[in-house]
Image 1 (tube, rainbow over the protein chains, first blue to last red):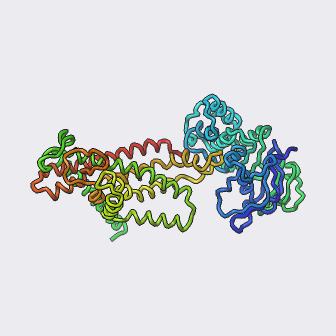
Image 2 (image 1 turned 45 degrees about the vertical axis):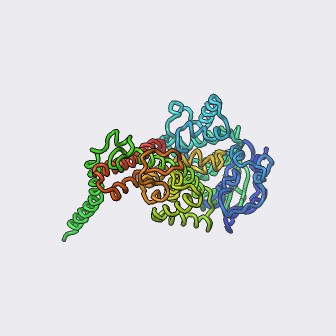
Image 3 (image 1 turned 45 degrees about the horizontal axis):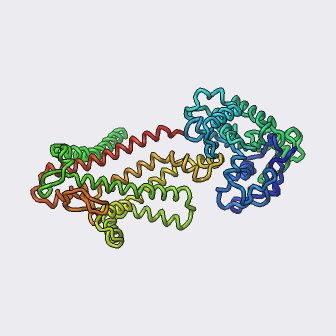
Length: 251
Length: 281
């Protein structure tokens, strides 16, 4: 198992309020890592630290180290836009940018300085393919993204992240607003994507986590309670709190 | 009286009040057109005034107002939008920022004649521009700036925060997000603010009274440092200062000013609807 991202004694505060305490976690490459736990346990914060999206939040404090490929993400030499091309993110709600399907997918690559039309077309098709959306939209790439259904929009957002050819994909409850069929499609594409990407996902239910996890971490009120192979953590957790949560006794 | 009747009376009252707003506008515009249309012809629009303004056309006033409005636009558009972007996207919440905002609100309520005096002191006298188009345009720019900043800032703030976050998550710098996502979305609102500001500038007399306007100047300005005639001031002059002025020419001048202002308005709504077609989220 190759470690892609490693969190070393990470603690984080919003003002004086601790959000994460002493997190130690190694996220394996080319696998689906599931972060789960009740609301307010710090899952989203943890994700947003990995692509530094929380940089814009004022009055926060970070301690400890987060390494990507062994390199400190918060070292002053890191280019934040470059980092975000390496670490893509998909949010809970589908958030297409205003504009067409094509414009959405190519927004990132264009900012990254890719201008060759043939290259952009390649990216457009391959990212929509990987997100299992190509067949549904190939005839109307210049339609407004807002005209797509919710499930399609969310797969568009996944395609948009993949268009940057990231190494890591962060997904924060990507299926919370989707119907079961769309959810199944998204889950299916995630399982296919893990061959090439490191995937970290906050599932929208414990069951979803159990379905897709290779590796899992259970967070509770900012603490990492238990981590391990998905198969073990979701069926036979060691910690009683993790067990209660997995069995649905609280949360 | 039954509740139903109270409601009916209430609606009738509201209808009457709205009518009281609309009717005067219709009457003013109607009477200007009615009494002025006879004076407006090609010669009126393209000739110099003659015979102490009692004859000839109003070309210098038209050109003057166009130049003043254009000059105002050149100064106020970059400054206003730039200021709005700073306030909405970059400025930290601090006492300093709050002071700026407070100043902007207060500046927009200052009477225009005060701006005129300020322009006289700063541009005409201190900076030595003399009574000139440049001094007038700068004075008008300062007058319209607060309004353009606050409407533009509002338009920028109306763009959902999520778009900035999405742009950042796709490797966009803060400026790229503003440039490619936020600004295009805010543009209809910004354009509305800019045009309303310019309309006010085009129609004002007091700010140019001491800074740019000439009483009677039967030729076109030779440079931007010349003084100039302008439609609103010309209208004031021929309505109050010239005995024996034909009423038709007064109304004709008013009509030209009105058409200029209304057509700017139409341009604004065309641009707005053009951009709004792309605005869906």
